[in-house]
Image 1 (cartoon, rainbow, N blue to C red):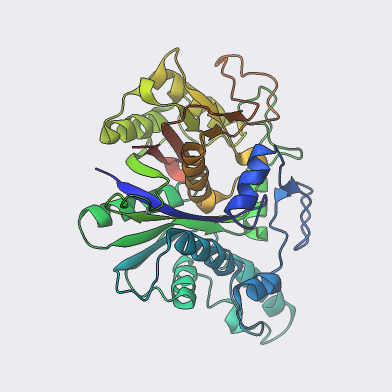
Image 2: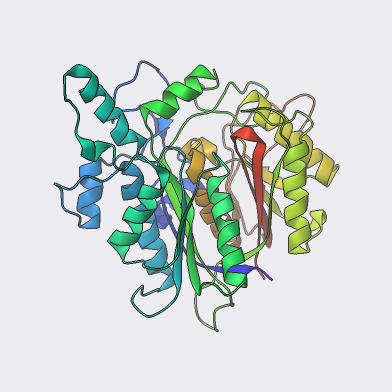
Length: 395
């Protein structure tokens, strides 16, 4: 049947809440620019949230002296907004779950510990490593916001938060919980910048998904969460859309790349539509993974051609706004998908110019309002071939 999206929350390089993100999306205003929060030898643009950790603590009303990972702080902002948007009182006796996801976890603090430890004997503060593991941020968010039910953390690279929504739906449909907050978070840190630089897939300019001149991705940081419940809200209560279908697949092709034939993405997209009971021709818009790397766009485009034939739906990549936010990508793009349906709008890949020759596919490059959006597919493809697709519908 599928669960219903009744609340959304997001913080990214283009805004500290849902409305700021939406305004940037329809204004074609990117958040990608210079990195200022820490130093790095790599001269690449990023999607940075222009709030320090201390400013995030102040926004959340947290003690300035207490140490929190940036992952936990960003997650608190988005989860708090999503719960408020849904009108959920965590103390009202509901069985509430939190399923969060991240790739870096508390790596931003661990990096500081390493530098201090290396510099002198007995150097480094242990409080900077206790938050290293991915699950710690989930526990910090739950503790700060009073969520005492089911907690879980997923880390499957860039498909992480899409997989979080899948688990949430299954728990709801098996009557294990009444409400689930699901999504993901990733901060910018040296570990990810160095890692992606070693793969030689960071663009020194604004990324250009599905463009023939694409030269790599821009990294970003963000947190995005949706509130899901099993039953459709009563008349008059907020409901953005329904999570109608989903699928996860793995083509086992390469540690960091998907099959050039698009086998994994095709399995995920077709599986999601089958679960939703929706035909390919009924899809109105695809929020593609669209990172801007040579492999991703070619593989994803090939899979879309195999699935949709000559009638590929309108599609775009919102990573030109936020950068690739890794474990948060599926979460923030689930929020954007909910907005696309509820506000009937398509967000553009505004800097596209030249199609990939062998695909001849063109993403939308202008904002389209009154777009007739009833069904949205959102793709999130991760390292190791772990690929996921979500299908949202208006009904």
